[in-house]
Image (cartoon, rainbow, N blue to C red; front, side):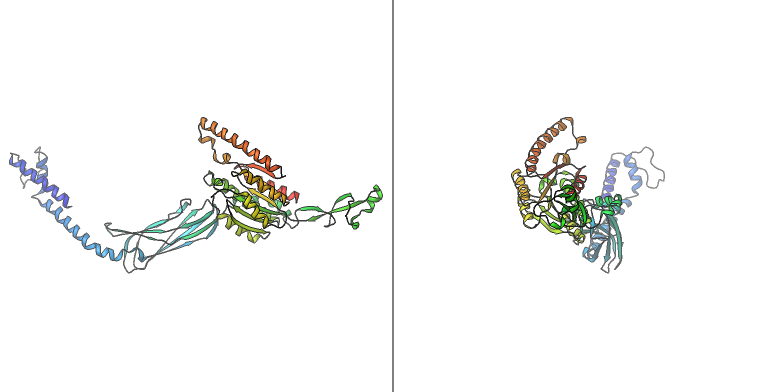
Length: 464
């Protein structure tokens, strides 16, 4: 305001100078607008004897004094610590892909009115805000409580923090602003996606007939109640199983065999090295491996099989002993939710760790991209087979997860295909070395990872 007043005063002075050189201003008593008398005469017509100049100057001075006098009073009431924030999450543990409602309660603890308050609740960047807003702009009277809420979708697993909360307090005219932060955070543990299992349950109602104990059968001589067949007598067979009718017909000693119920034991080994973190966002090799592990656990618990978990990189990060109790499923899910890709892969060390804690022969399923020392990988398989464990290696092939042809130029596609051929050749040589120990190896990509897991589990069931 003061600047405007002085600017008008400058125009008036310039007009007076022009008058002294013969300009003809409009008389002050005239009520008609100037007729072609020039720009300075037009200004002089509206200034009305400098009244407007002093109006702007006095108003500007008054505003300066009001700002200076109002600042102390604003400081007394504008304290972010006088605001209390309480955050309530609908569920502290969720599955990837779930929607979570978050409610924030704001309370003015002071006796002062806060005419303009802005509250911003921070959420992780990976969260999708699907309903409502995670901020509010409001006025808070003394002791008043205001509540707002919003819904987020959590697309990936992990441990996340909601918060801190940012607070901005302004005065009524917007001259002052005070900013603060309440560091209160709320943790949300997000399990791996359960969507694959839900889909399988929806379309697999007919499979319920087989969900009983003893689904897996293996031939055990002299045990069980279900007749399996007749074979020729071998030294050591109990005499009570001799089938005398067959002996009479063939003239040879024949014995009866029966099927006994037996459950399988599965150890899932997940490679969590840095190379497993490669791939498209939210669809890395590690994410697919974890989804496959969850599916495999569900299938095992459904059949009352025993399942254990080993997560490793250059060290064993997680070990869960073999169990057939479905109540332990959330222990597995929590462990998988916290897995992060890091370090290098040492399958030999992890296999030694797992074998020492497994007294009986089991099926070992290795989920690894095998991008580490080939000698250690082959040594680990040899070690497991030497202890009578069956080994299946399901290996996500890196280029199938990383190369998107639609986004590459023709030259880049040719280079990519050349890299794929080179890596595929190295992989086949490693697979050949692993298969010498009667272990199963399978290459997988994003599209066939989960179907391969289910096919291999059915293969384990048939072998018993």
